[in-house]
Length: 314
Image 1 (spheres, one colour):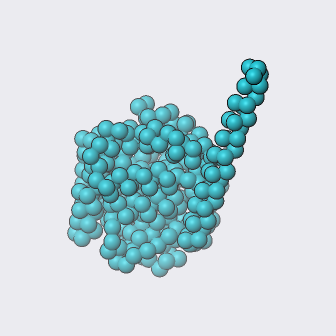
Image 2 (cartoon, one colour):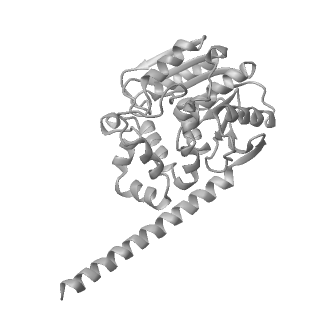
Image 3 (cartoon, helix red, strand yellow):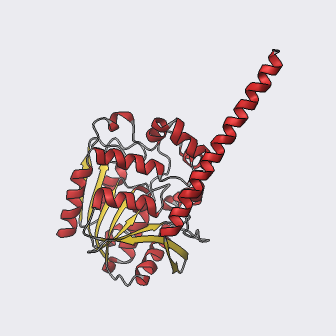
């Protein structure tokens, strides 16, 4: 057998393998999209349709997901940190899944869309559970609508004006996160062949995964899987810069809600200084700094559930 023939056979096998991978990835993506579309609801707002799911009974809580998320990521967060006993409303922010990306998709506009959604649901006053990129629009809502904001729990807050979007020690460059979420086949393949590296990219690194409870290990697994369909989150990821737009202003001193801010010093996605700055500027706030836990606050979820229940019971 000639070298050229061996090369042709190897190339053919590689192409076949890539074709099979693409078929499997697209099949799972279609299943995922169908499941999300079957359970979502949509409300009209002044900034276009906003997608959400709602479940449970009790005091209403708006859960606002981080970068790369959607209502499904918010639901994972609500179940991990909040649990039962509340009426949850989990939204997809601008550009995520089925929510519109308006012409001016600022964090203030997102807060207005939140208010319109709550009006549709006949909810006058709400508590908020927000994580990472979900924190800036939640801050806007609380500042713009202090009479409608009850309690807030803010986890691993993302940079907002005047912070810079660039973080030097992120596991991968900032631009690479858009690349990860740009193609469903590539992302699906990474979940199968390079899952540990993918987890590290979202700051669920190996040293933090050691000794996790079953609940937290499931949280990490579900969070990674929930980025699929990745391509339907790309517009939202590209809009995360709205939080640090120089024209954006955050009147944190106008917030009247009781606020609990949680941030780990070893967070490799968002600077610890963001959390400490919020605590210094929001009048009725309490800061819970953690020495270890990373961006996902691993190893602390049980304690954070207790903190959440206590906050809403006060």
